[in-house]
Length: 196
Image (cartoon, rainbow, N blue to C red; front, top):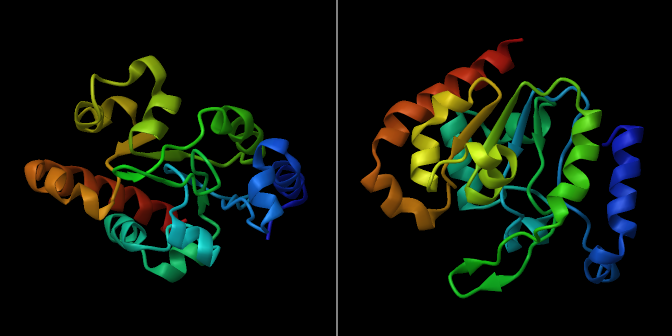
């Protein structure tokens, strides 16, 4: 359920000509924006499984993300703490290695409108390079690993993390500091929001 103001934005996204191909076949924009949310999760775009189920982060990546955050499915989907605002609200299609990137003009067009309505956002979790590039801009480091490593520079507002995709298993093995150092920071922050 959306608030009236978010519902208007949702309707405008559905009616937007740029999303016509999705709307025509009955695909709705996939995002969540509870009025009282404290944590905004910015990923890439829904995967095909998520889009087909009409449920964001409904796949192996979502399982790992929830594990990193220390929350169960019920808390993730049913509490009003989390806003899920990906860089594109529609599955972009398949590329040579994984999904295609989110459309470049989507986030600049819709994110500011939604954020304006979410007055209680305290932490923005930036998952992967597209979210980090958009939200950190010139503060981004030379590559994703360096950006994530420098997470303390972006706190308390932003926390950049690697994408929890199974494709990133090699990266996680090479960079054990991520799960040893950053995941506990993420979990502690989420616990704090769940307590209040």
